[in-house]
Image (cartoon, rainbow, N blue to C red; front, side, top):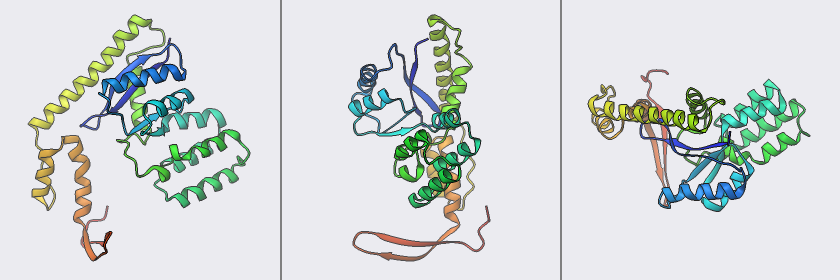
Length: 264
């Protein structure tokens, strides 16, 4: 079976969707460059700001050619799988996941990484060294200024693979694969249509002290996005501005949590 390349993203309900897919006969730079160019043409020339891949070398080169302004990020799910297969060290996999996922400052990330490498005796491991050299493609400490639509974690990639696995099997021929793949896509589209309907006919119950603000958000956002937003609003309601200083270039606010705020 030829490798399957899927272009996936996130819709307005925070659901994973597939924009396009292709079966490729050759996994080389020329093939991927052509494929990305076809995708760019389908987008009417509007290139994505961020691209997340499994780190394939030919794909990396093709992205630089077709999407030169895009931030190239490595998929956390594939990185963890590669860490397990290359080292077979559960402790490294666990600590590496912290380095990748935790919201460290850059100096905290560097300290934790070097401590982990020294403690596990991996200073001379070439795979680990190569991984560190690409840290700006996977460590949250290095990439927090970029928007990824929730793809920084492994759950979306795992979910997409799991859903596809319910339809597509390795024993399928090309005809069966195409039929099953389209069934999978059809189910995704049905789920999105159902969520569209729910967002229209069901209004969420308002709960915050700032009803006008919450009501405005409920009207403008889909249900899924609104329910992601509301906890942020609740947390904001527990804060008070203590001091405010300003200069020609910035405003600085000092906040504190209200004494009667409910502890989370």
